[in-house]
Length: 225
Ligand SMILES: Nc1ncnc2c1ncn2[C@@H]1O[C@H](COP(=O)(O)OP(=O)(O)OP(=O)(O)O)[C@@H](O)[C@H]1O
Image (cartoon, rainbow, N blue to C red; front, side, top):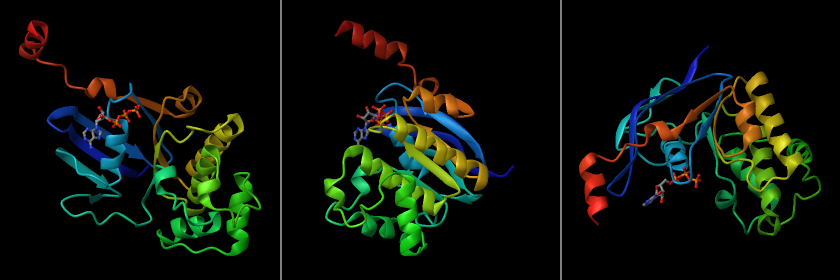
């Protein structure tokens, strides 16, 4: 199996605080890993770094064997997708425009019928001309899933993809991830608190293990304060 995403000894900081240290990961084709950890443990920050949106303080990242930094050549290639959803939707544009925009940013163009069929898959049929702003939270998630289904990226980095989805939406999300992993050999890294999604993943990595422990000096200062 090919290793699609590799990172070694990653250290992340938020301001002066070290969020995560010595984090390494190998993500193979068809593999699905759940990234878990309490609120604020750095799951989103890590996904942003792995997607090439921000740089790690330390460590190396390889996407399909290409090193991500010092220059990010990876963005907008057919490599990874970052399922942030709502903020990345262009609210003043309609559903179809958003879908075209997402797929074209990966160099992919589809027929009107193919876009409509992807919308039907996520239960948004007939909503092509509706403004993205007027979609409900769950419908915005569904629109992101339709884009994901069309793009079929090799690497999927999903940040709490089932947030705001009802039960059928959660099942649909798992079904799409399953299809992409089985038929497209996609590898999937999911930051989530959703037990059903965690159970679906083949592996779980807890970020808690990579949160640096406060030194004795720091503990002492805290106690004295
Ligand atoms: N730009 C920033 N400046 C300062 N602190 C930041 C910044 N971005 C994130 N942080 C801090 O980094 C920590 C990790 O945030 P992050 O969103 O990665 O956590 P998370 O594990 O995804 O949390 P949740 O489970 O709540 O989604 C938080 O304490 C957050 O306040």
